[in-house]
View 1 (cartoon, rainbow, N blue to C red):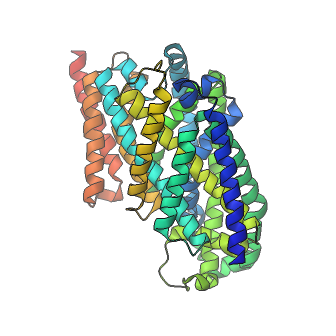
View 2 (spheres, helix red, strand yellow):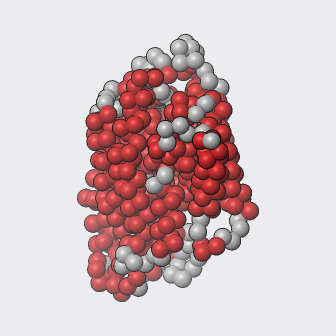
View 3 (tube, rainbow, N blue to C red):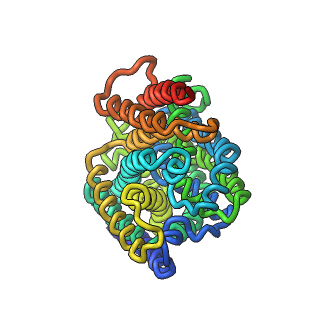
Length: 473
């Protein structure tokens, strides 16, 4: 009990300090431009670390740990798609979007579609993005809840969801993009140092080193070929396109000091995603599997061979290997990473709602208050959704899938066509996003093991091309 009190006390103090940062920047946010794009003066290092913290964050950290627990090192290929998406976006998207955003003072991603198509397309894009980011926010709250429940057994998953949700909402309502980006930098550095210098070495020693890994795990766990091509394709078509349609990413493009800064930030983010974060998260999950097979988790109610949620293997390992106090610090940094992603996603959803759906004037003196109210309501919806889901990675990938299948093709239209059809964009969004949503909700068995969004993107592209061909005539 004393151990938990010390660690929880450290965690509480850490969270309070993050909230103080939110209060600090709250007093300095004078407009929607301050609140959503940080005054457009951020540097490449802060932007780059914030991008990777937002994209990988706690949800992918817990999800990566789960993949390492299930299949070993091959799970790292999921974030390899992240570096592909980041660098493609830096080369293809940023040079086109940044000058446009600076000229027209864009605050949101759908404003780009409004520029190239029309207001109807922008509204539908805003609705799709809003729904997707509510789901993504829920995945972060659920990741934090799983971490809290596994670390502090006296807390249930539902209690942890409510606790995480309340803290995230409070922090986000207080903050703004400057607060998010600066705290992202601090939190990500703490997390990296904690995992590289403490987490992985301690875990490796505690489970018995290389001999224990070879003894308790099959050789496939140490291979990079322990996935099939279809699995990699599913990750590729879900994660790469998000770099072209993610509202949180557009906000950071807009927040960059100049185009060169944005491109440099994206290259930095890609390298942090893979190999750095990919192999750290996977390795800890793999060590968690060794500990499970050794019977280390029996005291937590998980004997070797018994059913276990793969996504709590990493938190249970950290609980086992970290001493008093140090555990509190590491958990604080993990929770911070989760909160950083969650508040970014909440801000994205709030921006979609106020800028693209309600279309509040950027010069409205009450715009920040409306944005904060929208954030509060959206955050409450995210908490409700989190209580209904079980798997963090599934919830994240479902949210990604819905967004990319509805939005990716119209974005490609803006990049490669001189006169893209607004009607084509509108119907491709409706049919693409709708197809993926129906396939996910009905849980249909799909051909070849491909994910729903493969068919959603395909349908979206077919609809867009057909209408575009008539548009040219």
